[in-house]
Image 1: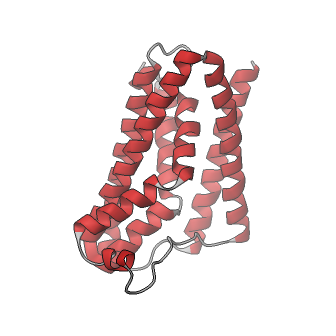
Image 2: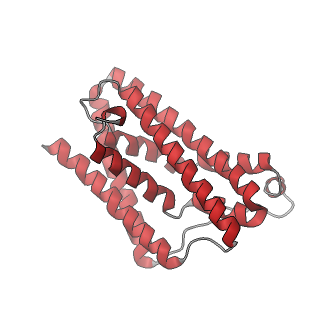
Image 3: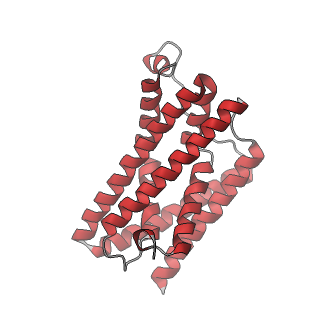
Length: 224
């Protein structure tokens, strides 16, 4: 057995799911690309560090929050897994609908010119770090996704579920950091805006299929 009691197949599936999540166009990806295009690699790296710090906070909250829930009632954890499966199906539906319609991903909200937020978006590593951190922390979908995503890879036979959550969260954060830094390096060299519509639809379709498969896998295990 490998990380947190996962087998090699489970760990490979987790890694693939994290990659698809990172590569699917969303606010974090668009913020990384836009800050790199506007402020260069330094601004992009600062935004990435803020985003990753937000992910780490969400992972810690999920780990210790769900550990407390488990201590109170194992049935509550089962209920949360069912709710997580439903949320994953909802995400899959949203991605599939966007891919079918060919809708471009929404950009992060822009502040009015001259406002404090607009000035903060200018040059300066601290401002870009804060923007990345707040964009991630204040996105409720990220918190919900961590609560729905991590439990799918932790079996009931795992003795220390808190440690399992922490290790999977660490793997998620490290993989996200590597992916986003690679994106910064690519965009800073190419200096072209973002992802093509065809690639965006492909990633959305792949994400929808993977999230639906994860939800189906959870429901099949619970039903057996």
